[in-house]
Amino acid sequence: MPKLIQYLFLSAFIFTYSSVLAQQLPDNDSDYVDKLCENRFNYTTNSNFRTNLDQTLGILPTTNSGYGFFNSSSGRSPDTANAIALCRGDTERIACGDCLNRSIVRLRQECPNQRDAAVYYDNCMVKYSNESVLGKTEITNFITHNSTNYATDGSRFHQDVLKLFGNLTAEASNGGVLKYATGTVTGPNGTVTYGLMQCTPDLSNQQCTNCLNDAVGQLAKCCYGKTGARVLLPLCNLRYEANRFYNDVAVLPPRPPPSSMVGTGGKSNNLTRIVTSIVMTTAACLIIGVTIWNLAILRKKKLVEASLESKITDISILEFLEYSLDTVLAATNNFSEDNKIGQGGFGSVYKGELEDGRLIAVKRLSRDSGQGEQQFKNEVLLVAKLHHRNLVGLLGFCIEEKERLLIYDYLPNSSLDKFLFDPTKRALLDWDTRYNIIEGVARGLLYLHEDSRLRIIHRDLKVSNVLLDDDMNAKITDFGMARLCKPDETQGNTGRVVGT
Ligand SMILES: *[C@@H]1O[C@H](CO)[C@@H](O)[C@H](O)[C@H]1NC(C)=O
Ligand SMILES: *[C@@H]1O[C@H](CO)[C@@H](O)[C@H](O)[C@H]1NC(C)=O
Ligand SMILES: *[C@@H]1O[C@H](CO)[C@@H](O)[C@H](O)[C@H]1NC(C)=O
Ligand SMILES: *[C@@H]1O[C@H](CO)[C@@H](O)[C@H](O)[C@H]1NC(C)=O
Ligand SMILES: *[C@@H]1O[C@H](CO)[C@@H](O)[C@H](O)[C@H]1NC(C)=O
Ligand SMILES: *[C@@H]1O[C@H](CO)[C@@H](O)[C@H](O)[C@H]1NC(C)=O
Ligand SMILES: *[C@@H]1O[C@H](CO)[C@@H](O)[C@H](O)[C@H]1NC(C)=O
Ligand SMILES: *[C@@H]1O[C@H](CO)[C@@H](O)[C@H](O)[C@H]1NC(C)=O
Image 1 (cartoon, rainbow, N blue to C red):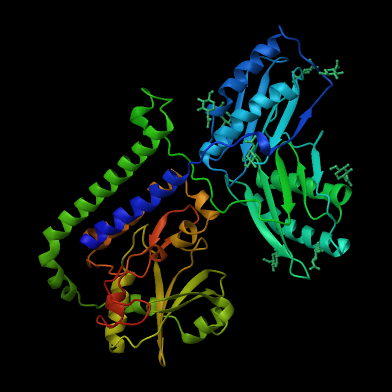
Image 2 (image 1 turned 90 degrees about the vertical axis):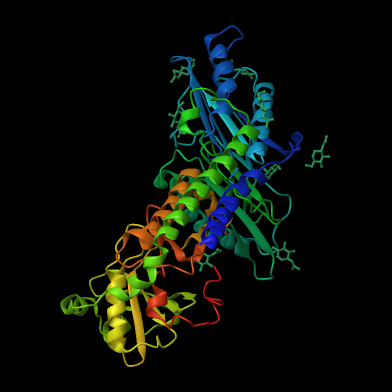
């Protein structure tokens, strides 16, 4: 049990660590890129618009949506001042705020009397207008920049760049709240080109795709064969360079203040937020951990008896759960390498599609379970009867020839480690999602330990055994394996059986 507490502490640590790291010293103004002052309509010093603009730009930096996107608005039409700001997806929170502050100062200097204006920095952009800005995708004006150097084979290079941006467009558009993607393309002589695309999060996937397509469409005109370029639109932008100009570190969205504190200190400073976030997360994990531990001690004695308790009579359910080897072979394309999606301590995992179109994950046990056929079936039946929203459902099994297969629901989002340790995907785990995952894991464990008929100790709980469904709910997998495989097995990937 102390392992579990260690685990929860470790998660609390990982979950808060990145937010502590997300601090950086402010830069100077050398990352300024360009401005776009729309000269059609000007305002005067004593106008209503001026007052509204001062106000809206004043509050803009405090409106972070959590993903480096800001929007604010004040005043009535025709003098409404609408403003948005967007930080590049890899910009840390402090650097983002600093970039915004400098942008706003620079914007007032560069465009002193325009009713519609924007400035662009490497790490952020700010735009205001008396027209609405949010969701307005038709392009009126934009900025392009190109490097001085030409690629040796311009036409080939251009094709590569278009291919890269084709991929990045899809990735950024489907990026959820953070519509941001980076990637590389390698030319025929081994030169690497680095690309980046981003949309504001208020755009729908389709709007983002359209906006980025418009941006890509400009490349042929502005920047054909150039080794680096930018196309800057109000709601999306792209950039590519011959050097790696972006960072891996993704923004960790700030944790929203706990609801009980909202009334008193809406504008608490960053340090307070970070400290609060550490304390709250740790406390929450501690409480969950201690609770589970206490409950577990209470029940510990019953554990041994419980595992012996059940006798299975329900043969019809067993038949229902049993899949023929032919079915599984057809679904997984004869366990082809292409279908392999993982390798775990107990064997390989393959993705498969049943005839009715349902997606399954098939675990092919690598070792003889050391059990007779009937005993294996009985254990499968017991595990299959465990149902909880935070457990991966066991759909069935197959035992034919030497094969022992377990068939599960397929979860397209894969496992937690794929998110936690991927710099881009990590940003999708906002605080609500993280809490939901932690809570889901705890609930799943509580069910296994306390509320199910079986009382199963997982013995191999780790982030790769926490799968995520479409709504990013945690689902524990590989539970009950000790019952289905030889308990004292010490196979390579699992190592010491209680190691994690
Ligand atoms: C601004 O920062 C850049 C590096 O970020 C540095 O090269 C440049 O010298 C700095 N300029 C000033 C005026 O501090
Ligand atoms: C707005 O002001 C700019 C200079 O700040 C000037 O160039 C432009 O002609 C003005 N536009 C109108 C419509 O007066
Ligand atoms: C923005 O300002 C211009 C010039 O004053 C005006 O013609 C236009 O109607 C305004 N737009 C809105 C949406 O109020
Ligand atoms: C941005 O400006 C505001 C108001 O002047 C200030 O409170 C804040 O600390 C600044 N943020 C950064 C990162 O410099
Ligand atoms: C490789 O190709 C790039 C782009 O076409 C060009 O800029 C560079 O000079 C080439 N390098 C060599 C070593 O040929
Ligand atoms: C684009 O995506 C396809 C499929 O994922 C991949 O095969 C290709 O290498 C990618 N191209 C670039 C330039 O990233
Ligand atoms: C813009 O700001 C308003 C509140 O001022 C907020 O309700 C809205 O969700 C924001 N829109 C986006 C896309 O962040
Ligand atoms: C590339 O940028 C330069 C200025 O940096 C500009 O003069 C030139 O017109 C641009 N090239 C194209 C094709 O737009």
